[in-house]
Image 1 (cartoon, rainbow, N blue to C red):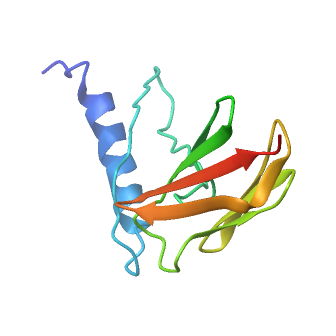
Image 2 (image 1 turned 180 degrees about the horizontal axis):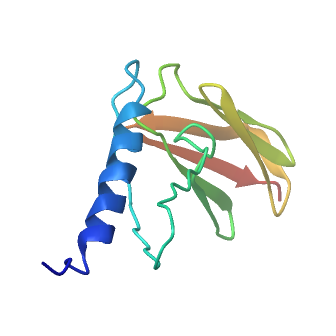
Length: 131
């Protein structure tokens, strides 16, 4: 009986799934964010892992107006500590859990007037420019 041309692909997929399931952490809630399966003739299946988590990078956006600099940062759901922002005249340091990022400001700001707010998984930072 001739073999099905997809037998190798299914066998490789089964190996990949087995390795994924064996390497899942029992301490965390595992999630699949994305998956790409690339097959080639006669090749063994490979798993390419990206060793980053939600806490490795802080996603933020910066918008500048005439009077203010607005920074919006997304708070990952895995953050257990209260996130905060350290606002300085030339930069803002955003801290979430064990991760932090320093955002250089395009112009100096009034630290006393500037503030941040954390609500619904979003950190809004408002920095009033010096005039």
